[in-house]
Image (tube, rainbow, N blue to C red; front, top):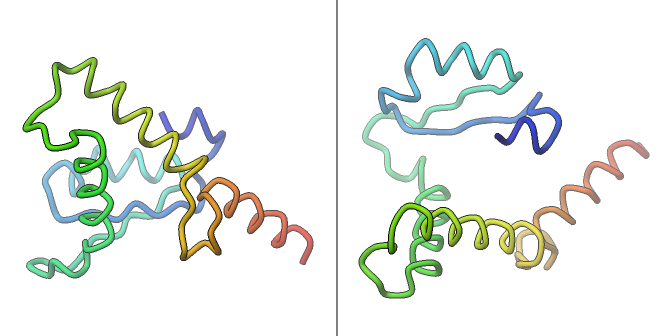
Amino acid sequence: SAARVRGSLAGAVFHSDHGAQYSSRQFAELCAQLGVRQSMGAVGTSADNALAESFNAALKRETLRGARRYDGARACRLAVFRWATRYNTRRRHSVNGQQAPNAYEQQSATLTLAA
C-alpha cells in the first residue's frame, strides 16, 4: 500500500467522487487512521474531477495503446505498475518545472525543511 511504500500518508488529501466506496464509514476510518484528509467534489460537477479524469485517460491510452482490454489481471497490474513507476520517476511535467513528480516532491520537501 501507499502507506507502507511512503512510510506515512499524514497530510495527504484523497479527492474522489461521492461513490459508495469513498463515502463509507470504513473508508473514512481508514483515512483518519492514516492521517489522510478526504475531499469530495460537488455532486454533478465533472470539473471537480477533471485532473483525475485526465490522469486516468492518459493511463488507459498509454498502457492499452489502442487495445480494448488487457490480457488478464496480471498483465493489467504489470502495465499499470510500469506506467506509474515511469510517471513518477522519469516523466517530466511542465507544471513541475520539467521535473518528474518524485524529484519535484523531494525538492519541495528539502525547501520546506530549509525554511
